[in-house]
Length: 109
Image (cartoon, rainbow, N blue to C red; front, side, top):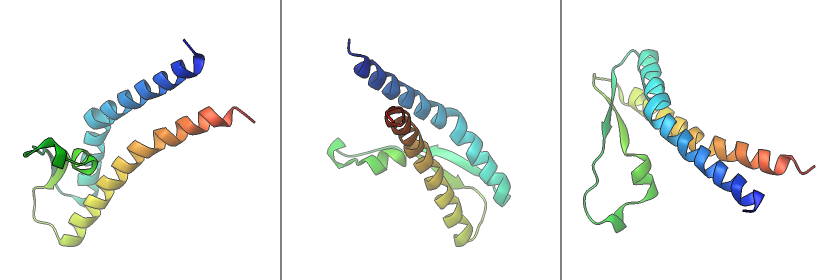
């Protein structure tokens, strides 16, 4: 097998493992940290999808694990918590790709 194909398969496998670890471990820790920062209880709920699968977009899949603030909070605090959640997910999705591209093309000086 070509060495470039092996490298690409390794990167894809590592990326999938990273996303699984992020969902199961790191996202939970970030949720608890955000809750402690705002002194609120934030729970995670799994959104169920209904309807035909052709209506489900990538953004719907990324929103599968919602954060729910269980205590009364202002709209500003809820917005900041949502913004932090989107930022965490964006970093989890994009940062490994940037590192992988940098490692791939950074070697060819």
